[in-house]
Image 1 (cartoon, rainbow, N blue to C red):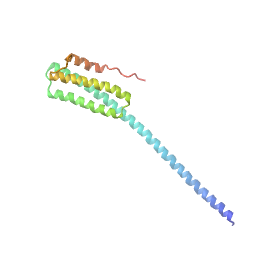
Image 2: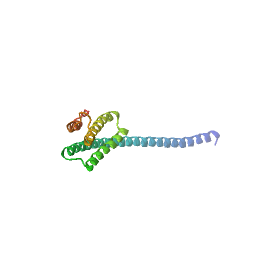
Image 3: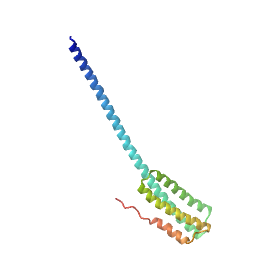
Image 4: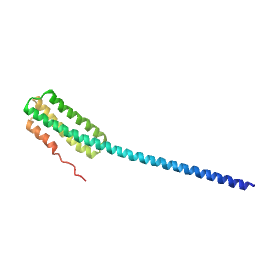
Length: 162
């Protein structure tokens, strides 16, 4: 055996082993990329699900707050307000506040603009109701104006569906 045969044999073995190593590394890289893509897809899906849940709960809590305001106005007309009535209204207000705060963290700007309009309207009516309840309304605030403002929250324009 001469030196060139040994060199050729070593080169062949090195090429075979090197090819297997490169194939393995390429396979590992492809597998890592696939895992990253799956994780990214899962993250997008989880974020979408989180937002959808938050938006549904925000809508529910806003409706419950509106209903609580309506009930409270009826109670104020029909009889005196008791502690349980005020507690029920405050509980609905606090639930909406918490959900709105959560939405502020994850909602896109367009959703927040619309949610802010509803939030401000609800808090405005809540303030009117509480001032009326205390017997210290601002000029022009009556049970009728509070009831009208509460009713108008239900009629706020809805976004067009695409």
